Length: 93
Image (cartoon, rainbow, N blue to C red):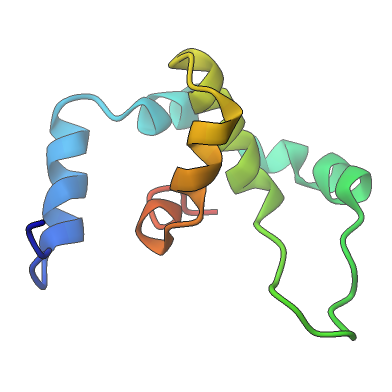
């Protein structure tokens, strides 16, 4: 497996933009932040007092669900990809 270089992620994002990043296109059409209050209220995660891993950003997860539905990707396959920190950086909040 090839190791990513120092600028590997930024180079990858530039190539993705050049080929038409679907999230960039959706971001021009949909203001995802409008959904944040509804998502936060519906998901009702803990306050973190007991510790543990922080919850995923609900807006980022909405974007993941939209991309998965657009590309006909199963939930099991998508859950493996979301755990990667590199993948999370593609969906800035």
